Amino acid sequence: MSHREHDLATRWQPLAVRLPPSLGSPAMTHATPTPRGPARLQELFTQPPRWLSRTTRTLTAIELAIGIAALLLIFFLVLAQALQRYLPFEGWPWTGELARFCLVWLTFVVAGVLVTTDSHIAIEMIDTVDNDLVRRFVRVLSCVIVAAIGVVLTLASWSLVQEQGIVKSPAMQMPMSWFYAISMIGFVSTALRATIAAVQYAVLGVPRDDYADAEAPVA
Image (cartoon, rainbow, N blue to C red; front, side, top):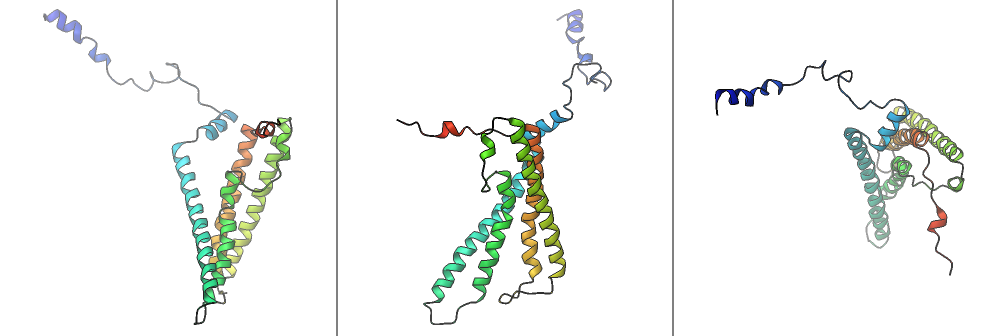
């Protein structure tokens, strides 16, 4: 290769450098505009950031783990109570107390997860209404009410956590502040998840379920 050909072959190399910030700005190059306002909220719900999805999955896993542990404890404690009737020695009085506490924890801790998955027992007659604005308003209003109740229960349980630390349960001698603290996890989760659900319904609307298609055809 001659000197001239070598010069032509390598003349482009000074261009293969990083552009300065001024040349890479949207004013100099065509760039996709950043969503703002409602469009940004829609993108947040439809394509959430990775860190947000990971955080949500982690919190959900913790709440479900507490609920599963409470359910298993209820099963084994009630089974132990039944077996104690046929044993020659005196039973354990703390089994019934702990089973009752676990039932309360199971009820409240997973309440927030049920809000997110829309699995609470509810009459969904409003979903059959053709008016999307009415369905959206009712769903947002119901989520706001649930969030308000979650905030009230959170404040009440926090007050009990501070005031009931001296009181202990009769059988296990467990501080009652622990009982209310574990329950407060579900109250905080319910308030946060219901608030997020209200914003999601307000931005994205309510998906309509076609109950007519779900029914079996009549022969």
